[in-house]
Length: 283
Image 1 (cartoon, rainbow, N blue to C red):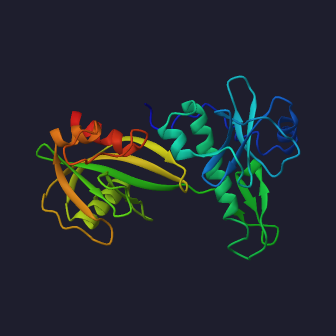
Image 2 (tube, one colour):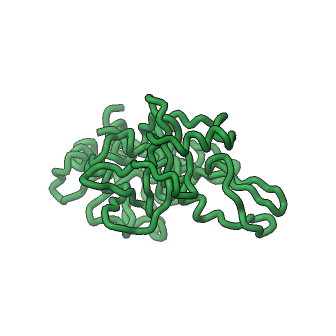
Image 3 (cartoon, helix red, strand yellow):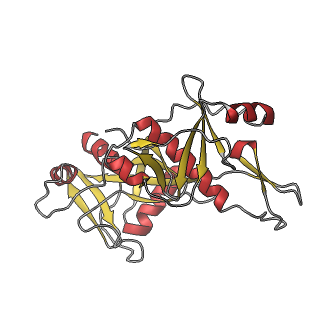
C-alpha cells in the first residue's frame, strides 16, 4: 500500500493558470472534471468520486491537466449525503492512489481560501486570482499565497531499539513517531532533534532523510527522517505525550503486523510514520 496522498499525476500548469482566457476555456470544456469537497470529505456516488463538470459552480480552483490533457478543478460544497472523509478513503484504499493525491491538493487549497477572506495588512476583502493559487488585496495590493507548513517526523534508533510515543487523544494502544513543526530559521534536522528532545528528553545525533508525504489536515508536508540517539534516558513532557518508550525490533515488527501481545500497534499503513518504522527496522 503506497503512502496516501503522495501520487498526483496532474500537470499543474503554473505558467498557464495566470492566463484568465486560457483558464476560462478549460473551465467551460464539457470534459472538464470537478471534484466536490466539504471540510475533510469528498463527494462520492456508488463508490466513485463525483467529477462531473458543472460550469455554473463558482468559485473553483484549478488542479491541473491529467495525462489526457483533461482539466481538473475543485470546489467547496455544503455537507450532503455521499461525503467520505479523506482519512477513511485512504485507510480503506477506496479510491485510486492518484485520486487521493488530487483530493489532498484540492482540500489544502480550498481550506486555505476559507481561512483567508481578509487581508492581514489592511483588512480589505481579498479576491481570488491565478486559478486559486493567489489571493489579491484590492485595497493595498498585497498578494497572499497558499501556505504549506513543514513538519519533521522522526523514528529514533538506539542499540537495536526504536523510540515511539503516543498522545492521550489517540486510540488506545497506538504508538507513532515523534514529530513537530519546523520553526523559522531552523533546519529540518535540527527541528527533528529539538522536537524529540523536548518531548522525550532523548538527544539525537545523525539524522537522515527518508521520504515525505503531503498531509492535508490542515496543509502540512510531513518530512520523514531516521535519527540515531546519543542518549537513551527518557523524560516525557506530559504536555505533549502520554507515553514514550523504547521498543525492540521484535516488538516494533509485531506492532506493524498488529500482533503485539499487549495490543499495541504502529500508525496506519497509509501514514508516513508506519513507513519510517519499517525503514528503521531494515537499517
